[in-house]
Image 1 (cartoon, rainbow, N blue to C red):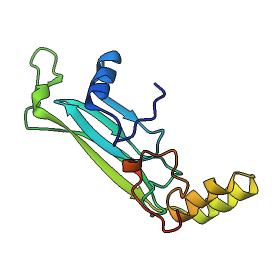
Image 2 (image 1 turned 180 degrees about the vertical axis):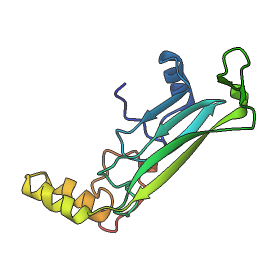
Image 3 (image 1 turned 120 degrees about the horizontal axis):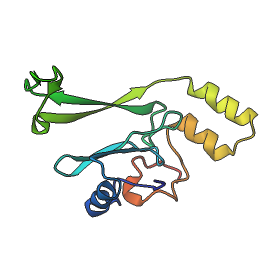
Length: 148
């Protein structure tokens, strides 16, 4: 799948279509670098995990990653025939934790400059988000820079 899915412009109907198309309950994507999570229908989760190496367009130079875990009620019991743990899926809940990671963003910006990357890419690293947000849907721009 190669889709730019913005939280502000992606419909629940489209997400549900993706779940059906790929026959899955959970999709984790990145592409836009903006982290978000939505459960468009019961038990169906779309998670945009952020992007290590790209700030979240919120004015912070940290990056965001996600940890997914399954929380279960005390319903896990060994099957007497197989000795494997069985559980009822209705007792499970997906836990989505977005975490910030500080890193040497200035070093990365210098390495990018040395490699000849465009200045707007380097500035994104230095200021915690792109100043050139023309490709972002208006509702997805989380920070308004004073000189835009």
